Image (cartoon, one colour):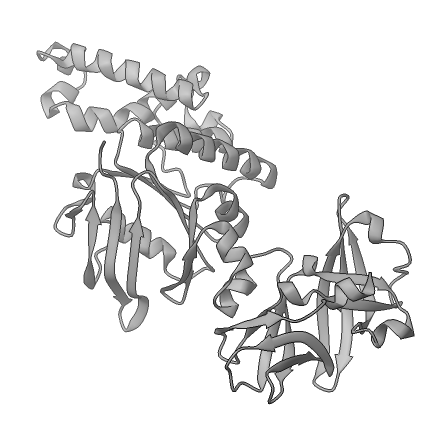
Length: 396
């Protein structure tokens, strides 16, 4: 089996005096689908270009298939880059665009020469084999009926498939994709996400995918590397990154609607409180007093306001806006406390809508302590555990 592992060791890159990548270490398994995800400017595209050889790192090493490729030019690294802009030749047909890498790879200059090249020994045999391979790739991507069209006659999704076909036909060790779906409309992006994931399963080749879209990262990847400020702050499966964020920046970036971040306090016994209401949650071995509590919208419960529920651990808020998404609702809640004004989001199913009321109505909010994350003021995750029944359980 061909070794297509990719390893990065202490990659550092600066543009002038501005650091872009800071000692990045990353190991990607052979045949893995890994996504680099993060906000614009975090260094993910630069890292991909360094793997491809389109940028050179200041220090550190890149290994592909177990060997250092720092000294190799891009075309010698046996990786295929798929760009956001497709980068197709507008004057060539689809077939010619897909064929081009193989012509450059397998035919001499004389064999590629217009008209006369076909009479150079061996050229017709090579071209026949190339045509078969292009047709096979086109069938894989369902563009076999488009081979005689030019890029200007294609939709965005069709052009993206052609760009993938041009990369596939080379049979590279790895595919490097730099936000390839960002130019497509929302509906087509959903379709292409599925097609890319299925393509990876069929090919079994290493995929490294760059995106700022967390949904793309969560739905396609085996693992996600979350990048912030030139560093990988967390590496793990989609479930691990979503359900066990180790940094407040990861918690805030992954998830839609975003996680709610609220002010908390820890007393001398390690017990946590939110807005002056004690939570059934204890922090382990920390001397932090002021902390930040993260709770995802689906881990809050909302109900019609009743004074008695405050005594049972409920919080009071006011409904600001209600979003109807069909299969679920998102309630946007205003909360006031001594520290100021806070806004939170609560996700809940339609069957829990009864009694919520109209915008401006008071509501009770309950926290599921078993699902909260507690972070220090610097953003590091703090260890803790829920105690006894959660407020949600006591309210039910």
